[in-house]
Length: 236
Ligand code: ADP
Ligand code: UDP
Image (tube, rainbow, N blue to C red; front, top):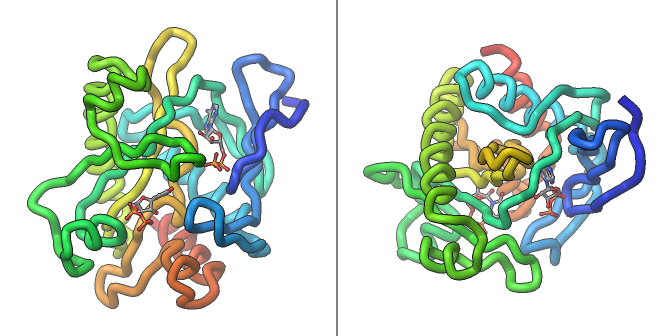
């Protein structure tokens, strides 16, 4: 598969066309950002860690019958994916209070929620990805009611599979963000990435942060922490 023209440069990845119309190549970058890109830095080695972690997670999900856009890793920092029409939603699933959720409800972080809570954010950088509800999704023509139902069902199934997966690595899955796309035949499929950039992961016993909060909160170097996540996931 040949890498062709650059289609899109995002905050964490570059997307390239390939010699196959329906296949893209995602290159994972060393850039780390927070505050919607207002804070950013280059961290050597991050791209290859997130490329590998995402591949491992998408393969695990495939084994559980959960389809995604992932095809295969082609180099340390690159993977082939199926081209989909992205739905401009950041779908967040929360198992435990943290981050903006803890702040919004005046809760401490680390309180287990009675059931997984699903939230939608409208993916639009210029609006700072606002928190939206089902009516907004419909009004904005982001997705139909049927697509929203499919997204919610899949998001909760993905959560259940990921909680199990991380548990085997002694990691508590606090919350995460996923994105979905639509295939040419209208199927809703998990896309983008799942990595310590997009999940909150805590060590099950020490509650140590094993994710991008290390960067967001200036707690140290993310690389050893991301290596730790990769090594633990490799061993399950
Ligand atoms: P951002 O756009 O938030 O800065 P990235 O740097 O991760 O994020 O860029 C990757 C972009 O590619 C995102 O906009 C994402 O929605 C999009 N994308 C992810 N998977 C696919 C796919 N399979 N087909 C088309 N676009 C995709
Ligand atoms: N998240 C993400 N991209 C975003 C916003 C959030 O991947 O643009 C992830 C984040 O890593 C966390 C979850 O979504 O795992 C919930 O994040 P939250 O809403 O608490 O936002 P934050 O506190 O990061 O601003």
